[in-house]
Image (cartoon, rainbow, N blue to C red):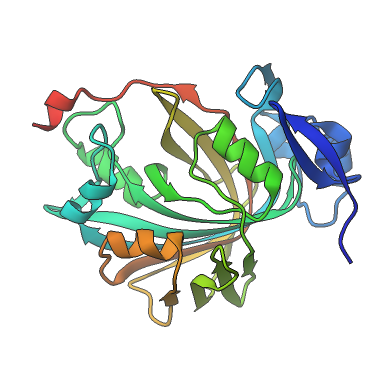
Length: 305
């Protein structure tokens, strides 16, 4: 049975959201005491230390950051030729290379069970890039990138399952988002996902056993990701902070079944000519603070010559 919805305005766009959901009730200012009472949420201490700020944005006045109180994610990282990666990157960005001529690309899956804009799922094809303001790659950048302490990325495609996530992500953040049928199930046993194309057929699927999970206290392991997008003619950087509560990984994983079909996600993966997977990371429980993008400078093109 379809859930009843209400229509809200986002920067002049009419969007349907679940009636009685967090966005309908709180408009990005969720009552943390109410959220803490949700049995799916382990706690809200991480968010109490992150005050929200009211700002004007392309989607109208809003609060930032966007809080995600219960999430699960999976990331399959593969090596790919730098020449193929550079064909898909804007000239101002450069791939993060693990060896001369060899960069990193990822297929990512997300399940957001409890968040300020209600439940949705998401998938992505992304490229690991050098920090935008740097010239030469430093050893510190490579080590922290590989350890996922602070990744920098450029996203080629980012389909989502809800309209509000698409409008906010595309209009407010500059991400290449569209709405499609997208099933993502992540638990301690398996990861199963299917992304549909515009005709309802299979774009991409991923199936794998979940790596052994390690539990963490809230705040013990917090990683960050900076994603670069253009809004108008200006470069912007979007910061996301992940509070890892239960996660695990496998190096050079076996048994990860990534299948490409027909659609934008699969086309983007093929265009990068990826090699075998080198790492499979799964977080069965975590939390996320997604900040609105801010203008940022990038390296001058002369630096790359």
